[in-house]
Amino acid sequence: KDCAYGAGMVYDKYLDDPKNARGWYKTGYEMGSAESAYGLGTMSQDRDKDYPKAIEWYEKAYKMGDTSSARALGLLYKQELQDYNNSLKWFKIAHDQGDKDAAYSLGLLYDDILKDYPKAIKWYEIAHNQGDKKAANDLGLLYDETLKDYPKAIKWYEVSYNMGNKYAAHNLGLLYKEGYKNYPKAIEWFQLSFDKHKYYASLYWIATMYRDGLGVKKDLIKARSLFEQIVDKVNPDWEIYKDSKQALAAIDANQSK
Image 1: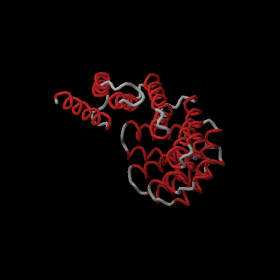
Image 2: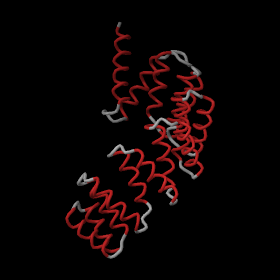
Image 3: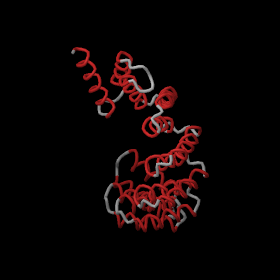
Image 4: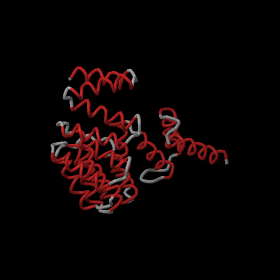
């Protein structure tokens, strides 16, 4: 049954041959492979957009012992069907079955969609205590942007930073810039973000602060150099590329005047 599942996965994921993939997954399922039932669920969801059939296969896989199917059901109900009661149900089942990612999924659902912030905090903290690196940063964002509790936001961003989350230093920079108007501290965190992770969004904010004289002496030459570095390095489709191009044009227009 494992070989049948393996053949189905190769046809599905690597050879883009859905007919043979289904054939082998069904063979695996008939031999007792829960993973094959899960594979048929993902094909029904992603390839066919047949969500009732995907639910049917995921539930079969779960009953056969594939616990990852519970979180897959939670995600399907959340993202495709916007049925949040069933999404909560399956995420909680997944968590009870030991799926560590389910706690973070519950935090996101309560935070972004249901706007139940005490429950979001509860599940983010559970996820963090289980070692999820994203949860501490999301707790920081929730305390920062939604609840405006900056001391708690700083606490969680720093926890996230110490866990190696590449966005945490950048978010600390934004908090100090926008929340506290502490521009030197903001530059310090933006610089850490860029030096450690080469996160060009942080470099963009440093450039704007040199351009505007926030926390540093106004220096258009320095600002121009940083904007040019961004334009040279990042994807032209990114927003900071477009914003940096506009900033360079504005600096050039000002200097020509």
